[in-house]
Length: 137
Image (cartoon, rainbow, N blue to C red):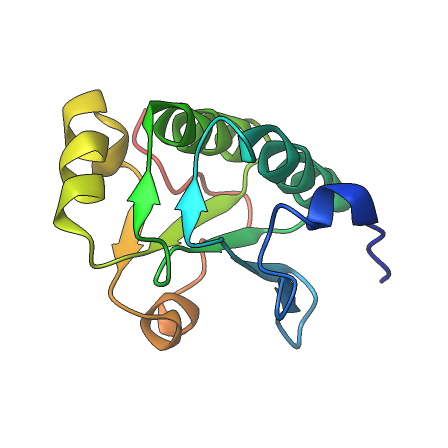
């Protein structure tokens, strides 16, 4: 499978390693930039949408290098979670940032997004079963 992303939007991501495809092609990891805010959130959102439309069953958002995420970024994560759910995809977040975990917990989104301490743990987590939603209800 081939995934084409808008290179203009990719500038808002970490250009050193903006996209990582898992070997089976159904899992995509995206490394987020050091800061997510109003300046770059639209480009990030557009690329996440492209990935979900591509058919990824598992989307890993790697925020391990992210040191700042404002409310625009937090809202984008909530929207990404909702869109992944609509596409029957499993959204996984990599972060150890207590502030981000707190914000996600306050919005209720943290209850449904798998949060992992590193990429290895996110990749090693069991995939959702085919035809079975990873979310309650």
